[in-house]
Length: 227
Image (tube, rainbow, N blue to C red):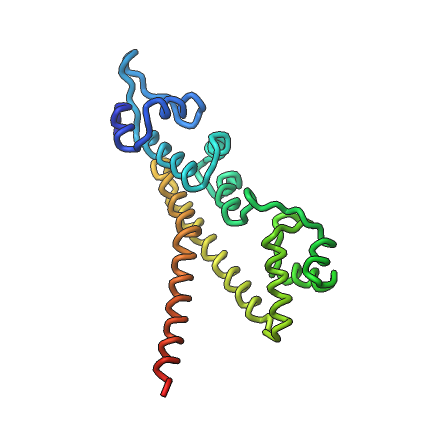
């Protein structure tokens, strides 16, 4: 389907000047210029504009990052690591996380020994994004493990969390594979929207909802058991 630029503006909510800027920056292909003052755009432009908006607003990507991602798109988007970078950065917090602690500093701050730290690394309970460097969340999880020990709690609970996380990761890889099988240039932004929203929105929503429901059931049982 072909669109005038006014129709692109109306359907995407992106201004004419911004669309022309995207073209200038190489994020969008050139319009079909049937006459000097008559330019037509197509569904590809529509999908890419929606994708760019999503990546800017939801994934906080810069124009330079989006350009790099789009340069690597191909018939199988799973083969391009660069296209997963925004999702990976959102999941790990690499954008905001400052891995400023050395192993020695973490050992001292958490009050553990090197063997204990190595065990947590080997088990995968602590998984810093940069080898040999640790961030605040790494330190927080280590302190949580210490608290488990101080309270006499079985660390197996955290290990079960880890196995659950691995299982979820496998499911998310299956999702990406399924999306790849439906890869079509006209659906490019929609496929990525589904992947990102499943991982970043649906997963915590479903998990937290069921945690709430489980806690509520326990509370109801306790209240019902009171004399």
